[in-house]
Image (cartoon, rainbow, N blue to C red):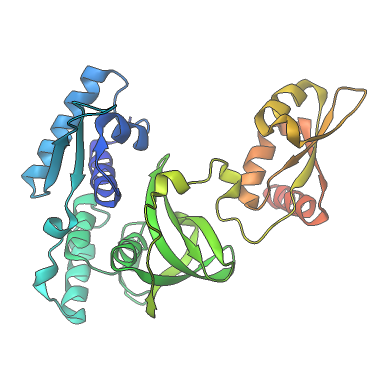
Length: 310
């Protein structure tokens, strides 16, 4: 079970980013393993969290669905227009002073970060002497600003410079993801925010319109090995030994089985556009799986293993 401060911060972010009101069942599903499984205990914990956020001025709205499949169900959301303090009109120096004071006096504070979000603050530049004690997700406020103001962003990911129209943010399994349109690939892409290298910059004049009806929950890849995928990358051909062949074919689908050998082993095609996710999947099979092709993926796996031994 997550720490309550972490859960409150995640609940706040979820209700701010959702494109439509959410029920408690949907909230518990998005904040996986952060609320109790018992319906009674889950409701009690949520009511305490809701009251705590309202006590600090967060305007959580709710509605009861009048009819249809979800008749009688209560759903929740946060009105961003009432939540964000847009009328303070702080200039860049004043906003920076607030950031410096917050970092110096409340390092790593979830409530401090929430206050910065409420003020619409950006992030400190890399030259700030106290940057090391800022919260780990320094790019999240900038990305939230970009999503709400429809501004394109630029950042480095897996060693490649990206320019992205940020359509939405999604919290899934304890990680934040950015979903948007990648200009260089001319296609939608999903990026795990903690893997962004360096800072995130707003692109001057880079405005966009988000697709009508877009919901980040629907756009999230079902297969984590496709997160951050670039242009079409060939699947990896993987040999799986007989003891794990049945589970492997069930996991990737029978249509991806390319060969069955007399000893019971099989060859399957597995998405490998996201190499770190692919390696994580591969190593779950321990000695029962081997990459056969392509050569660059096989070399990446061997190089990674040799690096662990050195």
